[in-house]
Image 1: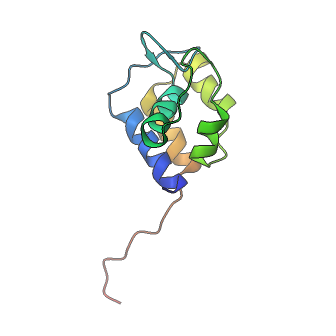
Image 2: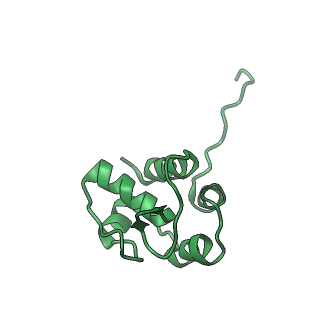
Image 3: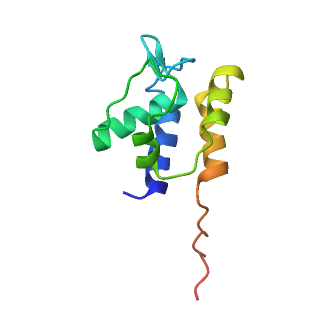
Length: 108
């Protein structure tokens, strides 16, 4: 599974409405931070457990994603700026998603 596919899974999960947002930890009784959602996906897809009470992304999850994400920016967006999951998903898409040229509808 390539990193762009994993990124799309993360973005889709943030936009899905399946996760309630919390802050100051990866996961607690009220929900997940944006990085906690990534941890949940990595746990489901690659059996990478994590401690929800931690505030830092486990290196195993970071390595699994295989993208140079800036965790500090994401922490700030989620915790200090209180950006919504949709806004964070937009940032991830704009910053990290590889743009592929759209197929032309004109015959060649």
